[in-house]
Length: 437
Image (cartoon, rainbow, N blue to C red; front, side, top):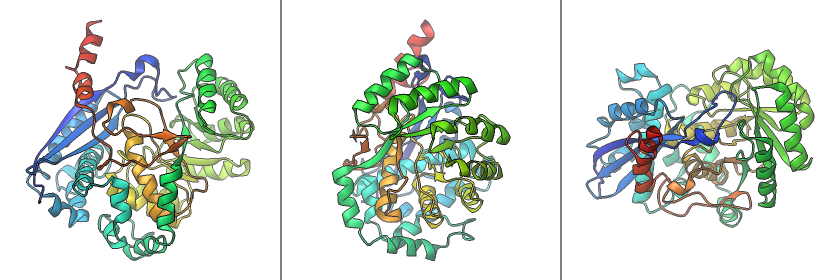
């Protein structure tokens, strides 16, 4: 079947997580986890589902951007798209008028991610495979044909990418079997949102330790003395043998970041995440160099605009942990480029996740990275946040602090229609009731 695309629809779906301070950090104090939810309908009856993640206000802008891109998609068949996926990616990102709104960044790129996520979901469903398996089963040349190498050939050529993937073929089957048995290692951010009380921190850490978690991330950046107190509390709770990371969510200037993190060095964090403006590549390089003697790395990427910025972060030795995001970059296509560049520079990938659906999506990418690219788990882990999974038809499965391989066909994007209707903004029951209060 051709699976010709008849329509691309999108809805604004929001969850009032700000009411209980879920997701709160030094910069985003009242997030309402939300998505622009895309559904692709085809003439065969097969559907594709995609999302991009937001924090509430502004989701309606992303919805309008998706609608602006829909005309480039409707009428095309799935086979037409995937036979020249690089060309299709470039079509969406290079419309001679709309690219002015980016290019390849901001709202228009978030919308591009939502549309492309739905296309990848459609492709995986048409092959009756979960997305990670679709990728793992593709030949190196097929993988490379999905990537737009424009602007990155000075660090990664198509030939080099094929060579990396060919080399990783050795042991692929064993790694896939290992993932089926054990799953991919995860860390939790659910215990230490900035708005949580000490009582909540203690209770959540105790429960997490009982459930087998050994890697914990703490939000910091609002008040140094409070950070010292909270980091001491968490470190005492988890003990010296477990892993601690800290995340400032872009709060500091460069010098302030170095000083602040130096004051927290006694708690032995593995990394400081987003210490300054996410666009400041050279600032991150300065911070990385200053913190290296303390044994603290820099992690960033969840708000990195595109593959070109990741290229420069890697060139400048500005990060020690690459954090891809399944909805910030241009979907799977652009994330493939970043995974390959990170491997070439020998920098481990530890994805950003959480929010609404990000865990569901990014698990596919990190499984592909281990099985087909990096072949390494050294210093690698994927973020996990225990919120809102119940709204998906194929929710993520965590066992013993590991992501277990998704088995349902697709990219795990599909939401329960009942949840979508209830949380659609502003007419859904949840929002009508909130507005009536």
